[in-house]
Amino acid sequence: MSASTDRKPPRIGEQPAFRRALIATVLVVTAFFIVAPLIVIGMEAFSQGWAVYAAAISDADTRHAIMLTVVTALIAVPVNTAFGVAAAWAITKFDFWGRRLLLVVIEIPFSISPIVAGVAYLFVYGLQGLFGPLLQAYDIKILFALPGIVLASMFVTAPFVARELIPLMQAQGRDLEEAATSLGASGWRTFVSVTLPNIRWALLYGVVLCNARVMGEFGAVSVVSGNIRGQTNTMPLHIELLYHDYQTAGAFAVASILAVLAVVTLVAKVLLERQGAGRGGRHPALATPQPAMAAPKLATEKST
Image (tube, rainbow, N blue to C red; front, side, top):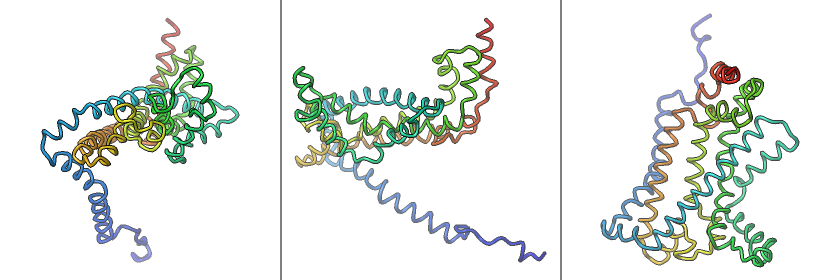
């Protein structure tokens, strides 16, 4: 056969000119839509000097907003982590009626606007809502307080951990857990010794994303918090109030904290991906666990 018949048709993107144009387009878009806003936040935050920046951060309302955001994350992230692990384990390791429905329900926060979720909480826990009269009778305050902020944050971040674990645990299958159970390991022992080591990087990956979203959530929290300065304002809500009060330097100072958090999250995301976290388990060690490492250990423990 001639050389012309053996030659394969060129694929899209193999031409140097096209490849360079594509890379240049991506770099330009990234510079204008991602890098430029971060630079502007830093410049505006320090535009009036370090003294003004320090005063804005040390303001009582700002400190309360930071503290409220941290407390919300400390409550919402562990709860959603436990929920994500339990949901992923149930969906991937057991067969039961409603399994697909549970997967759809977990993904609902991805398809609903956070503001809609906040309004829904008003109709559930508000004074005129479903449980409003009962809560008022027992003097339990959910909305316009910390519980409402935590509930709204938990709702919008509920799928993050589960959606990182489900593809990985599906790829791993059930062989290791079944082998551990057959060797006499309890359910908790199986989870700690077999399941958890194989999902640790994906779990950390989901926790990092969940924490970043909790601290940056605006829509749902703005509805259920009431925007009370110094009481129910998280950092995103406090930034809005400062900006509307024409305190531009203060608004950008608080925004710089969230920007730093975003950069730290990105770095953590890259590091975890290098360790094999990514979606669906990109790391070969995670995608193809070695039963010989877990089963003998459990067998030895049983024999002793």
